[in-house]
Length: 325
Image 1: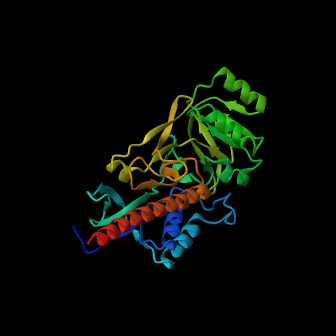
Image 2: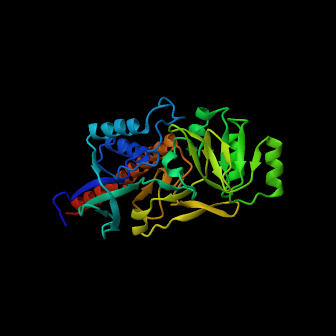
Image 3: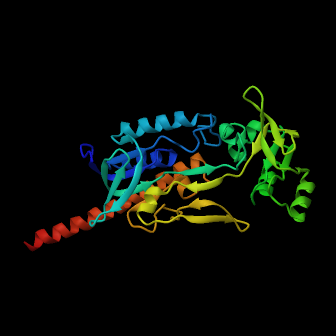
C-alpha cells in the first residue's frame, strides 16, 4: 500500500455530485478540513442540460459541477479523483476510508453522496439515448418534448402513473403495453385521459440522424414517437455504506420493487451509524439536482454541529483535568 497520500480530515465526502459538493462547500466555509473523493461518474452525466434548478435552468450538469469544485477548492477543500471502495470504523469512532489506488484516508466524519445507478429496461438501444430522448422525469425533460408524440414503456408498476404525468406535457401520449399486464381499471383510466394503449413487446428503437423517431415492436411494426419514457430500477451506490454495516432497503410501489436506497433521517441525513451521513440520490432516489444539493448542505450543517459538540465535550474534559491538577 502506498501510504504517501494517506491523510486525515475532519470530514471525508464520498461522491462529488451536487449533494457531495454542496455539503463540502458548507463544511469548508465552516473552517473544516474536507476531502471530496469523486469517481467522476455522476448520475446525470448523459444529460446535456438540467432544468428546474432556480438560477441554473438549462445549465450543463458538467458546468455546474466544475463551478462547484472550484468553489470548494477556493475555500481550501481538497478534491481527489478516485473511488472509495470501503471504510472501517476505528476504535476512537473515526473512519478509515480505503481507496481504489491503495491509499487510505482518515475521517472524523463521513458524508456519503454516491448517488445511484439507473438500471434500464432490457430493450436494445436505451442506454445510448438515455437522458436525451429516452427519459424518466417529466419535470426534468417534459418541457423540451411538450406537445410531441411521447411513448411510455410499460414494464412495471410505474407505467400508468408515468402516462398520467406525461399527459400533462403532451396530449399525444401513448402507453406501450410491452411486458406489463394492465388491469381493467388501468385501461379505463388511460381511455378517460385519451392515452392510447399499443399492445406488443418493444424490441428496439428507430433512430434517424441521431434523433429518436420511434420504437419497433415484435413482428416488425413501428410506432413513431419523439420521446420514450421508461422506469429504471434505482440501485443505490452503497458499497462504502455496506462495508460499514449499513444495509440498503427495498423501495416498492404497488407491491413491486422499484429500487434500493439507504435509510436516513430526512431532516439531517444521519444514518443509523454514528458519524455517517448521507445525501442525494443514495438516500432519496427521486430528488433532482436542487433537492440533492439542499440535502448535502443540510447534512453538512448537522455534521458541523456534531463536531462542535464533540469538541466542546473534549474542552470541558481538558478544562476539568486542568483545574484538578
